[in-house]
Image (tube, helix red, strand yellow):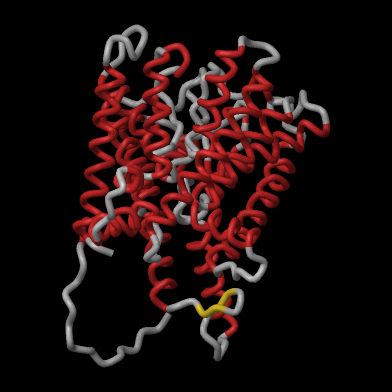
Length: 442
């Protein structure tokens, strides 16, 4: 990891966010009054593919403003440096080592064939978003004009695949809570975006070549995704099954449908088909755990990542069993460096969430659990919220200090704990001294 490379990526994200905020401030980009802090918050939420809103998207932004949001979500999902790198490739210019490193860090990809990988990333993104657009547009066309249906389908397809959670409906997807086509299509787009580009590329290679071996990363991500989706669906469904303000009005099949959709979005995206303010405290707390885990590394999803949690669980079980073998998964050894990094990520992430929650509770005078829910949602770039009493997020009730803190959380969450920490602390100089081992009782 190169500190200079990370600085360029971080500054590029800040530049994109600032440019997006300025574009949204243009008179023809929004309707009515728009404070700069709200434009900056919206641009950050879109670029960091979060989905928290302090302005009602279809009412506050024109078609031009909505197009800006689509562009920001696409840039944030794929990565600014990846788009720049692909532009170079289309111009038939080869990438130098520095440019390849920028693209690798942006996509969290370590191999050397970055030009081929980049082409596949954009090809898969185009195909998946196009398929999502067509399916959603066909469904929307049953009750709106063709041009409007196409725009709605395109906007929601981009938002879903990039795990952003923005919607052009005032109440998000609450009007489609019994529509299996809409919810399952958007759910599938979210899941595909949350797997990660490396996983998609390897799955494609496996389909094309039966002898291709999936990496341990891909296997852990796939197994973890399935387990989290199933456990989330069952847990949240069981807790809220008899909640008259949540599932009470739905039929049996629609309860399962919305439980699944809830599980999908609590991990990676900010869409909602039900009023989340009606969730019980138990569900809100359990949901923060799913949000903290998030999706796959190198994906459009946020969180501390499935592989991070999986590595720490495997290492913990290995330690408890006092095994004479190093920790391993799918017959592949997990290095001590990966375990130490996972522990550091979880510790620092937990510290940031706790600190931010305490600061917001004390400065914004908000309730603890809804604030914790909002903080985790912002930091893990999820985008769900218990709301402000209407359809906006809880962040809409915060003052300048509160909104600024949420903006910082989204930026840190999108860049990644380890990347931001390394950016601030830097790399320790190599030392040729090794101290004797000390006796520490745990």
